[in-house]
Length: 242
Ligand code: BV8
Image 1: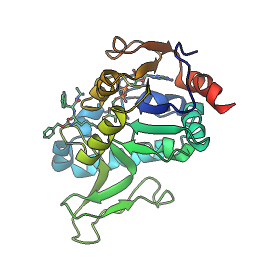
Image 2: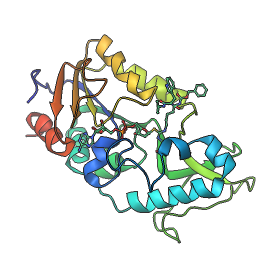
Image 3: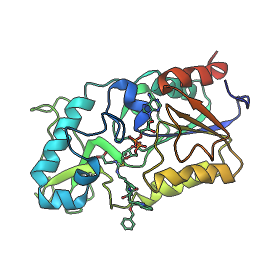
């Protein structure tokens, strides 16, 4: 499968996007089903949308939690988790907020854009709260900050918001010492996540893109594997899992 043989001592990094969860039933952002409940994510996943109509944004996340709550990890998520469980040096840097890498068993995860099952105070109180999976009504979440009473918001990086500098730093450090980078299921459009792959490339990593189609990142990749992540990843990692 890979032109470069995977070695047991390889430091492997995965940079994943919405496409790795497509086979789990989570809509992608820019694919054919890319509209979330008819909304353009870039119009609703913004601090301005939340400031202007918080109820509409919160209701959209309730709808998304309900949908994502019914989705299960697919063989792509499990293949990465199995590598980690086999003791390989694997880190997953994901743009996804669906928690499916964790639910598949991965633990070395950097969630660049947050997690849909976490909420935090919209006025800046430090606590990050978990949204109970069995909340009633399903998918909904507590509304008031227990500290200050202000509205709670998803612990998610919206468009126009900075990523956590610690996540960026940790990602950059990892990518600068990565032997093999797999860029899986991302259209390479959203910044600064889309540019992270270049750090590994310039540090000498072997870069593999896994996608159903070419993207702006394809020209940087040493090898492009076209197809569904759920079919490709188990085959790519098979030599390290047998
Ligand atoms: C910021 C949470 C700056 C929300 C998300 C240059 C530099 C810096 C910023 C910018 C810049 N240019 C533009 C910007 C602004 C913006 C941006 O990038 N806009 C885009 C639309 C052009 N970036 C930001 O706003 C970021 N913030 O940089 O702040 C700043 C500076 C100073 C002060 C203040 C701020 C924040 C971006 C984070 C946004 N939040 N998610 C939510 O989900 O509710 S991003 C969102 O898009 C998701 O996280 C998603 O993962 C991500 C990226 O999309 P993809 O994952 O790639 O998904 P997509 O649908 O596009 O593609 C799916 C791919 O999978 C396709 O290629 C498809 O072919 C493939 N596929 C499908 N099925 C399969 C498959 N592959 C394999 N197998 C399959 N089965």
